[in-house]
Amino acid sequence: MLKKNFLTKNLLKWVPNNEQRLYEKKLTDVMKRLKIQNYNFNWERTSCFVEFHYNENFYRFEHSIEKAKKNGIILYNGLDCLRELTQSLEDLCGIIDRGMNDLETWISGMKQSPSETKMPGFQEEFEIRYKTLGRQNYAEYNTEELKELFPFGTEPSLKEFTQNQIDQRSLLNKARL
Image (tube, rainbow, N blue to C red):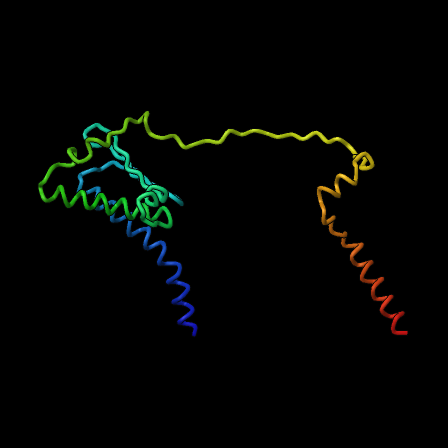
């Protein structure tokens, strides 16, 4: 029993981190095969990217859950996106290794200047302030109009509900006597 619990706890801790390390290692190997020394990558909850310089040009590959969903592919998190992106780069390595074309030919249409990199979207902050009107005089409201708006009436408060229960019990007890 102790051995089973020990293994279960350790395996549950080990598997996700191992999967992350596995894909990061795979990406490192792919980038070595492409002869790219300096690159940057990141994955987050819903997307990932790999960016690098090759022959003095800047390239950025991005993938996200939304892009995959548009193409009918179901991905669950950013690590899945990184896995797909790494697999695509690995396929590109295979094509280049076969001698069809060099890397620059394949990625020439994907150049991106550093100024064109997408800045993370921002949300404008604004503050809403409410001015209280003070204590309201409910006698000003026409209760007949309110009854038309709410034909079923309003629910009784909890205090009224408990009072009605007490009244019904007392009537029931009097009827028994």
